[in-house]
Image 1 (tube, rainbow, N blue to C red):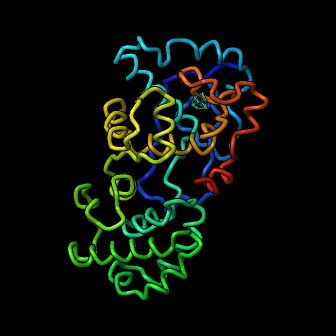
Image 2 (cartoon, rainbow, N blue to C red; image 1 turned 180 degrees about the vertical axis):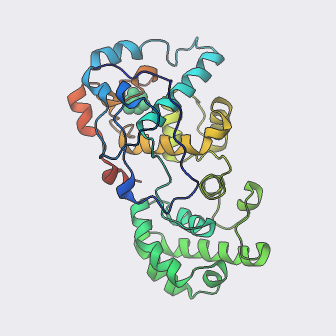
Image 3 (tube, rainbow, N blue to C red; image 1 turned 90 degrees about the horizontal axis):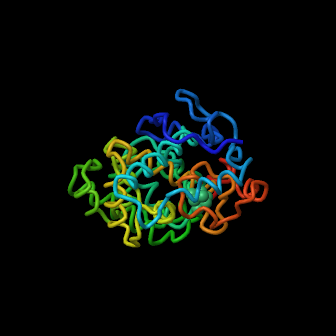
Length: 304
Ligand code: SF4
């Protein structure tokens, strides 16, 4: 099979809301030339990348320039944007997998998602939001009741404190509404830059880079950064990728991290960006072995 043709198609941008995206609607496209046309949406379950068919060619391409010390700034920017375009072709439906109907719900769900899976959060939030639909309702809740509802997400006492403290701050300082600016969001209890950027990007349509564990790992593997501090990583990625792409790119990296570029044993031999990745070889390069490591959409939703 042919290694992926980098860079001709534009990304598919989703509307800035996540509630419409049920897990069943999420589907990745197989990578490679056939997946590179615009306007197609993947409806099938994840398939191993076509790149998996010819690992030898991938290996040959991977050695070509990507991430070498002598790579110029311009080459780095071009390579970063090509990776983003290929991931857009591979995951045209990449989106925030937390279910939400408005900014308040997304803020709560994102706080709850710490140290657990989106799937687990999506199991508890319908009950939580039905009982406490507004910031004022949640601020006035009985903490023990909130704890019992969100218990299965783990760290439920600390999370109850955070979401109720956040709701109280919204009522006291923002008339119960979620502010649409980073500088205001990060002043809320339990809200850091990562959570704030999720909310800005997915509920307000303001471009934001979500530096979670997947984005940290992948951006280093791609040679986009050598930093370990999330704020520095955010700024380095922001300097490589077009601002309008920040939110969707973050989701694509998260999807790629959950499906193929795992922390342990990434599926390099089934990876659509292998020709552009200086870390090709961190995981199995053999197509057959690598394709077994690729997670389906359902499996990925159950992954942190
Ligand atoms: S490390 Fe392997 S799986 Fe991850 S992006 Fe690079 S080639 Fe792909």
